[in-house]
Image (cartoon, rainbow, N blue to C red; front, top):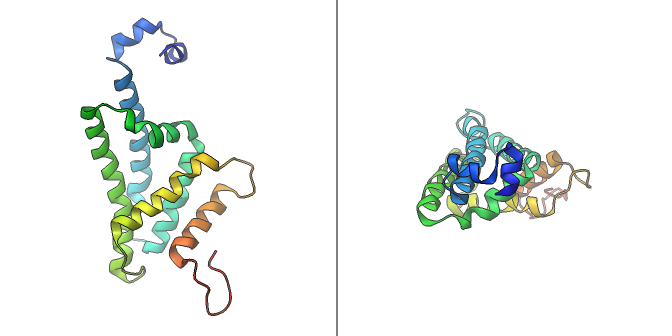
Length: 171
């Protein structure tokens, strides 16, 4: 709380004039993170582009967002469990809205025949899981750029690990 007070130029006690406590601050941070992600993903998920292109754009945008705002992403991905039940329920509703946008891309790909008929929920969780763990190991200036990682993740999901008849690898 002292760090927050220092960052906004208030006395620690003055913060409680604006918020009721740490839970409210955490909920506001989580809401802000999800609102940014939803604003990024919604136009992609609802676009008329082919599902493969929407998936590639969505992965790239998500990875760019979480690497540009790594601290905010870490709070979103690691601290949501700290919310008390009423605030956690509100957070879950917002998170589910975000997941539904990813699921729409998967669903549209299956419906169009661009993607194999897979379980939409499991595939969405796998897509997000692969991307979410990036916050634990990615370092800017490393061997691969965010864009290269996004392309590699998409190739892996769209093409799989099976060898191709022409001998090329999928990724």
